[in-house]
Length: 217
Image (cartoon, rainbow, N blue to C red; front, side, top):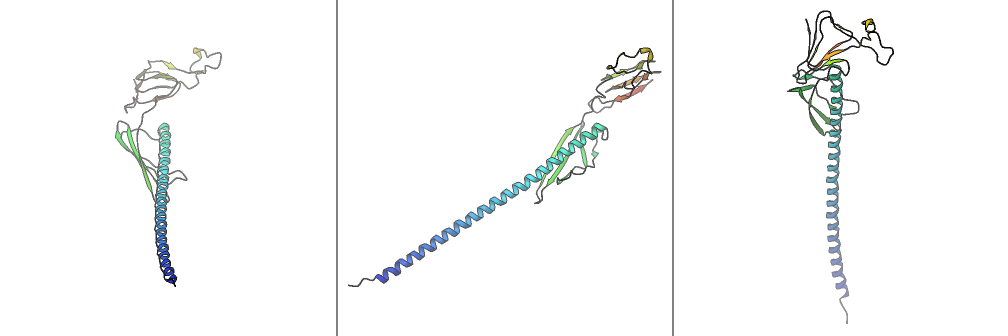
């Protein structure tokens, strides 16, 4: 008796082919999904890196601007005026950022400026800063009155180096003075006829934007 072995082989072969095609299709779908996911994650990572670079450049610009403002206010190059102040700072080497051209006045010695940073991929980031300026006391040592220094007629203000002995005889002034008898106030320095100051008169500010004055009578 003969069995249809040839027919059985053909049926098994068709089943194997269909199974292989299905498995191949599943593998293609899985591979495509993996590639798509990888591509998306790569783009997200790239965007985050680009945004972070732009932010770091902006932050560097802010720190640079603050340091320049501190120097210029301290040296008297810039003075708190209650109005907007024009700036002309250039970005530090190696950082891609746009520094402010104006210190915008907000009132009460408060100001605002903005710095933007860039990345090579075209991302941008902006940081806005508000600050308050305040004049320092006229100086750290010497004759100082926060509200008033009132020097009477024919008075003298002299200085000497206390580390050197013997100290000068008062009768030797003003010749023995060291030219460092600075006088200052955050309110007013008032002098009269024949007042002698062997140093500088330094005028501060009352902390609310009103500058001290020198009055001579």
